[in-house]
Image (cartoon, rainbow, N blue to C red; front, side, top):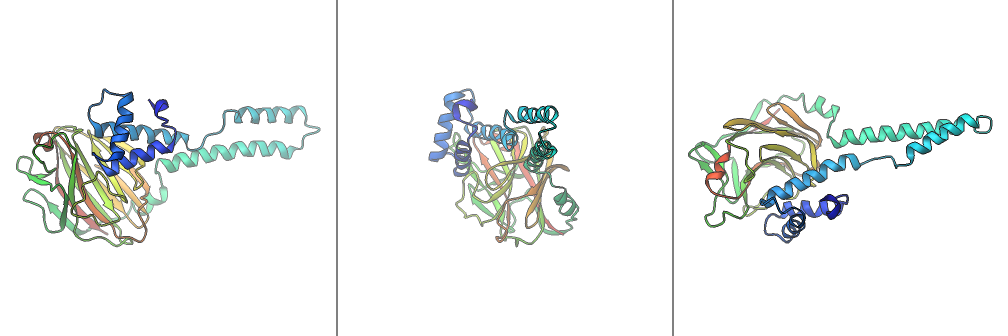
Length: 326
């Protein structure tokens, strides 16, 4: 599949990212779905088809980032052999240069792999050790949506059954993906460190409800319904798995499989001016640069992207959200 689509190039990844940002029904979405379906017609869910394709792309990029050429090792060994056989004619400095080149490439590979995974000891020491004790927003959605939040897109509703916030529903559009959610009524200054935590109840792993805990660098309009707006750092829960995405759409850090059967899961994003940490029930998935603009306010929020019957929307429900400051 990857060879037929040219998955080793960034052009298809860019098109795939734009399709997910623009959302279902867009020209980019249609073009990507058409290409993917031509090679894999077994997956009927379009959104899951795109998400999994991007995850495969991103997981491959880590290993393509820096790599010595196929003849590099051979050349180094030939240089060593020549150094031993022609010691009288070849200066020792040349041998040292060959060995140094090998060390530099090895170090570069290790550094790139470390950065790609998002591991950052400095971030973990500073932001990770910060204690967030001052409540800025604390909302229980069992009774409704408090005034601290502003709705956008397809308005989410309070589930009488699960006593929490779930995706909205439009009769007659069960086969379409519809997006909407809530965002903080007021933004946070870029220099303000804060943490946003969502308590989510998962009845069962669902590919029909994509839940996103996000921090945006631009205020969302009431009509925003796209899967993702430009300039968002996202912790994404889809089909029982949590993934982290930077504002440019690239996959970051590790992924984690979640429980189901009514389990309550806590998604947490900690953020300062430059860095972010993402945790799920205390398990760290990412620590590193968040990629948001350093001079724009931050807007935490929850986004649902859902399809299917109204009953299926009860599978993933947000019970509460807290925003805390140090």
